[in-house]
Length: 165
Image 1 (cartoon, rainbow, N blue to C red):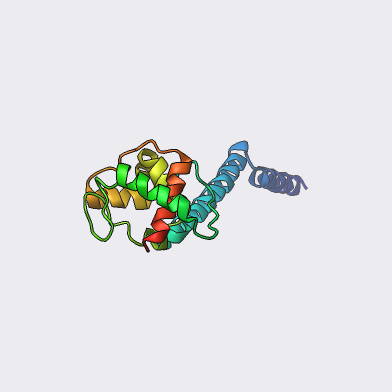
Image 2: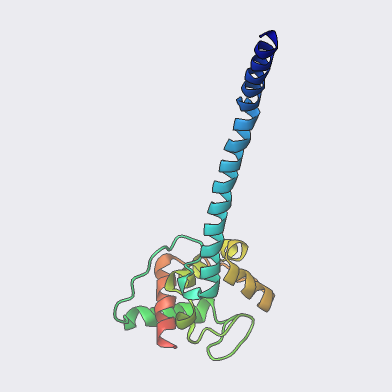
């Protein structure tokens, strides 16, 4: 009888110690869950970055312009944009040929209007944070100069670009 009591007490003690979890076990599980969520978030971000990298027409760039609505071409705005382009941009960009900067003929078919305006208005941040802008800097070895255009002037240049596709 004593032997049975000792065996039963031993079994109960073993079960109590083996079933109980410590606080550090719980913390490890919480850390694993947090790590899993972080990994999943990083995968989603990387997927979006890959999608943008594969399709430059989904890249809006970095800067103040988040949306541009194209309507019918506004020839007066385009004419003003050509004057601004000739005065501020033509030292580095030529239509129809590579120069200090890339040929901008057809740029509206290669880049989103938001990207174009952000590159005009915010070139320093674009070359730091935007992959396409970084790649262009590597290819041309000359950073785009900030000409301190207003959004209205940049929109005029963009409208001019629509006429040289």
